[in-house]
Length: 235
Image (tube, rainbow, N blue to C red; front, side, top):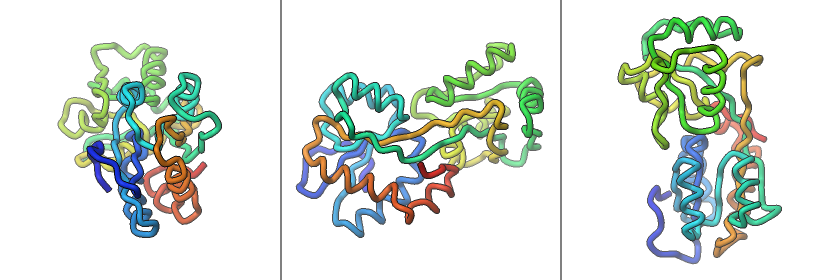
């Protein structure tokens, strides 16, 4: 598995551009796929805005993995093949604190709000979870000077790990791999947002069949334990 954009194409290569939400799971699953199927997967894990830029610039990666709504929008823009969307996982938002710090009660919306109000600074991402959390914090009248939004491609958990925020919100799958933080748990159901992440075939794909082979692998029951270990629910 190669994390760099391809310089040259081979007959048995599959290019993938994926949201960071599936990065940790893919880093574990894709090498198995390569061994079992004889393909080399050339993967790029970047933010959604960057994926859009690369698609519009003509990136020939076979497969695009993003939030389902983004895949649908790319279909409308003529960047992803109509009818090619395959739902992979359902992803929830979680909260984390610095390693060793007390873990606040977040069992209800009221408790979560108290934890946020007690924090000196709150970090969140630029992805789908970040857009949603920003709206929640605004409705809760959390002062803007307490908020820390991570740049695209940077985990919100990094702010907590280095002491620049007390709590971080992001997709659970993006919090769990971050060193220096402790995962507290998912948001309570009354304020939870579930995002479906899906795969779609790039209109510029040179080997659409290979893209289908990889999506079949990622949606097979054998992949479920790995997906679930990163807080992702198979779709």
